[in-house]
Image 1 (spheres, rainbow, N blue to C red):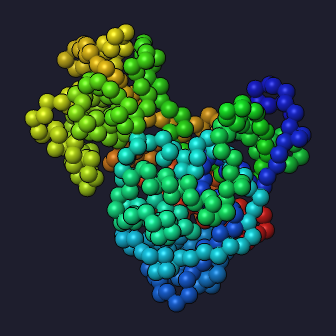
Image 2: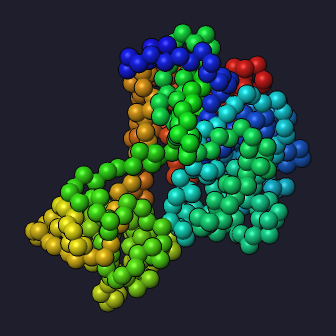
Image 3: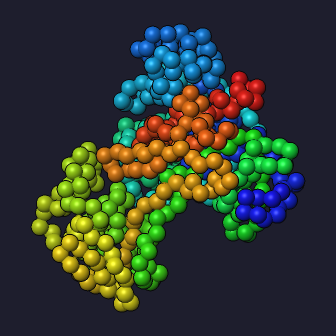
Length: 444
């Protein structure tokens, strides 16, 4: 085959699957569970109302397999198809014990699928700071086939599904989920996808997926009929293009204060991760300078709107205290990093030079849509929220979550248009895309 870049590659021996899932985060895991055959059903004897005329009748007509419900017909009633499943998983604002939910699962026929993921199950959650809090209650972050309360009961972990959950128990949950749902044998960990292009003369499938496994560096080529694209919102990290970025005292990842001996730390950023790092480093006794491009009123608005989150309540408290160990540089950016821990920062008042022990650069990332080489341009729509979470989402068919631009491509997680901040916002999309794929394969 000749690829779009003009290279000659033989892929006649490529491994073929009906579905490839790229990315092992919550979006990819949710889709994988449906593709494995975990079918959502309506629990007998549990009254439930969708509050939209006709929808409840559609559900009860397929009580044993809700994937059979015509999602286009649901959409015509005025109810978003994703909200059909979301309301069954989260019918109220509080966590419910698994036996009380209208939704339950049975195992049916699945698809031939394979997941390729750089990180362990849980995706980018494996790489957030050690003690990071989520923005939402634990039960918002769960996969419906394996509720967090059930995981807590089986492991004996003291988890409150209604409370904000820390990174560590959440990652333990995501690590346990593949074994619990029988997904592990189909997950190829440590594989970094390098390119996804249209299949041309392979005789099978629509997609060619190239990857490199770590640490052996072996290259793999696989083909598939359908592709679940769940690479995550920060699969392409932003780069701070200033002199000295490669000096040893400059860090592009924050985990915990223990990683930063010394007293003086500069944070360059301005998003939620940078806010967390500034708060935690201050409370560990460090002197923290925090440089961000945004203006003071924008930052204060976020803090005031986020007082339900403990670390935003804490940063507000620090800013009104007289600790003297948090310096905020608004409308500023780093000009260069110099040897010996000197940093030049452009501020509205002019050039400032700081002497620091460490710099933490937390400037976020974007979805790596560049992996989709050779396909038509994507229709992207902006997604913004009051917590400064922002990215460009792929436009999808709301009934199936299939890309409007690339047949057979299903963006998962945050990448799909119309989803929100957490797993509660996008997990229900797994049933839309999984149901559509299984229907195409004649399994529904």
